[in-house]
Amino acid sequence: MPLTKTDFMFGSQCHRLLWWRRHGPDARELQPDRVLQDLFDQGKVVGQLARERFPAGVLIPSHASRVDRVRMTAEAIAAGAPAIFEGAFMVDDLFVATDIIVRADAGWHLIDVKSSTSAKDEHVPDAGVQAHVMGASGYPPVRIDVMHLNKAFLHPDVGDLFARTDVTADVRPRLREVPDEAARQLAMLDGPIPDRAIGLHCDEPRACPFKERCWPQDERHIANLYNVGPKKAAQYMSSGVHRIDDLPPTQKLPDAAKRQLRSLKTNALVVEHTLGRALAPLDVAPLGFLDFETVSRAVPVWPAMAPWGMAAAQFSYHESRPDGTYVHVEHLAEGPHDARPALAQKLVDATRNAAKVVMYSSFERTQIRALAKAVPSLGAELMTLEAKLFDLLTIVRENVYHPAFRGSFSLKFVLPALVPELTYNDLVIVNGMVASVEIARLLFVADRIPLEERDRVRRDLLAYCERDTWATVRLVETLRTMA
Ligand code: SF4
Image (cartoon, rainbow, N blue to C red; front, side, top):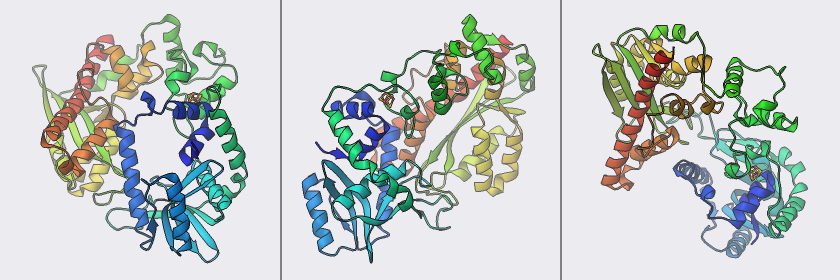
């Protein structure tokens, strides 16, 4: 089996990762979930639109065998094709399919299409392996571009949807490395699983799907220290600090991390005496609780939206009543048209009487500001709502720590630790990214989903969003008790 471009990229990240991919392609970790599948689908849409920029291009069918694809590419080149899509090349057991190659006076231009909004460092080795195999096949590209989405584009027609970044000078020095690295990977695949210590390469350029196999599942691992990203965790590990307990006493840490250390030392919940005062602004009525779900498409479909821009398409809102119960209002967009005006109106109506509105993280604030821009006729009302927002995450982070938080203050960790009786276990949709993909499916490709499934997904989405605001209600009650 030759190495494909994708294999080579995974192998360049970590030989062990490539070994597992090639020796166990059916592994649970490698099955794309809905979010990853949606990312692939978005990439296909972008790729198709990019091809439309080269109307006389010849497409090499990707369902043909590799040998046939290489042959058809050579034939298209010989026949004078001005551009080729999915042009395939193979040398020394290294196979690549190129997104677009374009014939120019001095030779061929290689264009690698990406659905990101900029050219990234990780795109350089990707283009490098393609350029190497093209060159070794007799067609060295004279220019190499990453064609990506243009972050300045606004739907429907402000600017160009695509931008191109010339990466030729970055790719050239990498070309020499490709054949040796490919030979190392091919030899490695013939042997037993290689050893590789964990480190930054497990997260960059992409999070490895096998982290659960290699990383210790230990709440005291240094990667679980509050506010430690992959880079800092790798630095700690290379300096010999693998567990939070290994930290030297002189280590400078943010207050939340110091609280984490205290909590881990006693293996107990830590509650600061400042918690009651921090919650005092919530001693008002009616008290609201708000949560949004959003959609985000590579190629935007609603007015004035940029590639991958986020737009609120669903909300759940609980509001306290004088008798101690709560009223619930919810909204989930329907149909492909711009969901924001109707959602904004319902949101303004629902929250009009609230004295304060609790959210968890600053995400809701960002969305309300975006809504005010998108629906200027309700701008003043939405700004009034923004002034009532109260971020509960900040209060938890500055006052509370439980060992089960594992260094994170996301509801996913905070809720089971502080309100264990309230779970998401009975729900089908249990995270915001899946919710976002499912909303997009309902809005934009509903005609491809059986009616029964559509109804079920709507119910699942409504249940998930409602649980998020109810969780915040219960969390405030719990925090008050703790205070
Ligand atoms: S978790 Fe890290 S070491 Fe393990 S396979 Fe993935 S990248 Fe390699």
